[in-house]
Amino acid sequence: MKTPALVFILLCFYFNANAQFALINDKDGFVNIRKDKNVNSITVGKLDSNSIVRVWDEDVNKIDWLHIYLQTGYTTGTEGYVHKSRLKFISDFKSIKNIKYQSNFCSAKNDSINIKVSSSRFFPKNHHIKYHKQTNNEGSYYESIDNKPIWGTDGRLPEMAINAMSVVINGKSLSIPGAAFNDLYEPRFSTMQVYLGPNNNIYIELDNSDGAGYYSVIWTITNYKYAGRHLDRGI
Image (cartoon, rainbow, N blue to C red; front, side, top):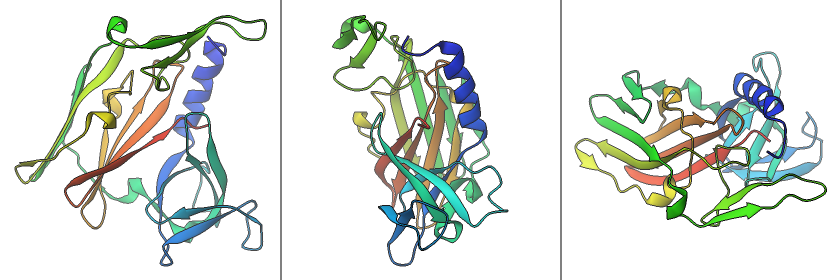
């Protein structure tokens, strides 16, 4: 493994306990990310409204400028400060309470929405796997699967993979592409949350991990269509 497992596990627990997701919400359609906690600080980035970011601050009620992070790649991202008036916390939206799960699936259901996500065992022989050999500076580890990063582990092959996702709204089944989930591993279905945002937006969240490869995925449904996903490793 690239980093001692215990260190990663402790970081994952801290990451999960001290962060939450929010939407950029600005009447101008975008917001500037500041280097420091004031409007006169230099701009380090710009985010469009409805972008999903992670908020690191624990007690958001006591401060005006919040520390946010937007993951842009497996090992890259943008961080800085945004005034809290420009954010809407996803957890503040109404949620679906009827959630069921077992080791290989989870579901959420209300009067008009039925969501299911399931997994199956990962079989290495069915995939193209890139292996990083040990060097003087770094140990050996599995680098990619089908030319994509391995979400959910810390350098080893996964045991489980998300293999299906269905969303039915008012009896109509939505088209969810395989690219929305077929590179996501080690799901923890007990963490499923579904939030009902404004303008027919639905946010489906799973926090996944093998214990040392923690990450979050949020799928967004907008106007009865799959709109995309947001991935976050908390780096």
